[in-house]
Length: 62
Image (tube, rainbow, N blue to C red; front, top):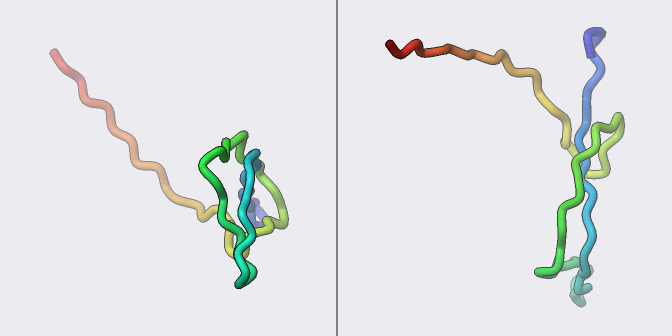
């Protein structure tokens, strides 16, 4: 990452799909997301994380 590499993200899950006649697959209601994986080559185009600066502040209450 420090040398300019990209970090991709991919998801894993279980469930059923219905294949439509036009070639698309429709994920059904029984889908369960299992986890997200950090990968070098995600299967979804453009699924790369973009670095962001984190801005945090803490409010002190008296």
